[in-house]
Length: 509
Figure 1 (cartoon, rainbow, N blue to C red):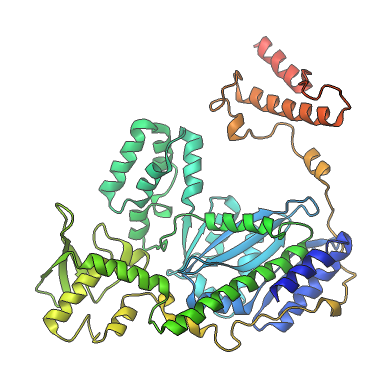
Figure 2: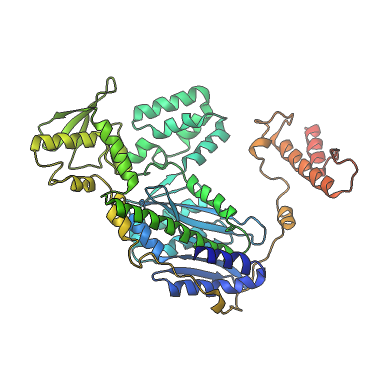
């Protein structure tokens, strides 16, 4: 089915750019009619031209609610071939295994707050999705764009909003100069205030401006491990929205970001089918194993179980409460572990809270509890299987993961394009060629990192002069490429009017 959808999108709809807009609304309506709980959006502007269109499949939303990590990521990307000058807005979910599944997509003329609100509003129409996402147990991660943050603040006031650490790292470099990523991640992953301050002081010793940027211009609870944990947020082991960025790159390769809006919508459905097929195969393997947990959770439990054997456990006066110390580390502090609260952090160890998985301290305490009480791993937990369910979040349970793929719950029905009736009411948006898109760019654009005089080896004395020189080089390269010259290696020495005005102004000063 996925290959058929891809063939339809690539072969049929790029032949006629203008007429493809007449199929968007009928295709979305057909998708809604053929799939239960599927919601769509289609808008025209005042002139009758295409303004926005998107969908969220009910089956995909059902899968996400049942067995995905309770977190999502939102981002926008652009079309690359010049046919349509709009944006693709995507909401994606991640599974414990690391698989990324696009949940909803909207094609809009720009990356603005209204577009993100339209996307979230469409998702909220699916039964149960608003309660699932707009809760204190849900985390949404994004960059720091004003549009996406405004939409999250208005539509998801109860969810935890976290920032992409890689974007923040690059911002700090632009502000204070180059430094290593592992030095930044040491600041991000610090699990106590002292460790955080120590890591920040190390950065301040070499890059004071970068440290000042992180210290004064960013709220710690949006990105730093200790402070976001203190605020009750969970990042589920994820520090960045780069998974979405990677998916955007794959979307470019797969042709989703090429051609028309209809092409992008149909190919995104094809991609969803590919991911669901992959998840179905994983569910079949889990069913054959007969495990209580999915494979990635089993692997993590086995690793921490081996580490637990090297921990020393001491009884306390409180029932189900133990002091656990790692004997492999010198001067290790004993952790207070309460088995009635398996997801509570203890000191440096934030893994039970952040990932809702049992750490070595919890496993070691449960073994001592079983030895002392002779019947229980934890309060009212008498079997090993019940204990595994007790110390793992429901998203790690094999029964939920396999159950959602049984029967027809995850079936997605394609739209028969041959039966679609074109909508004569929808006019196409303006098509832009590559040359027209280049002409639309302002002359004084923002310099890239390589054009920044602070980073380059050139003799540009000001940022403005660097910008003008960059524009001159582009203009020279373009003109020399188009000219019929017998000396292709000759570099143009013509000075643009902008450079002349800049130099004259400097001379007057």
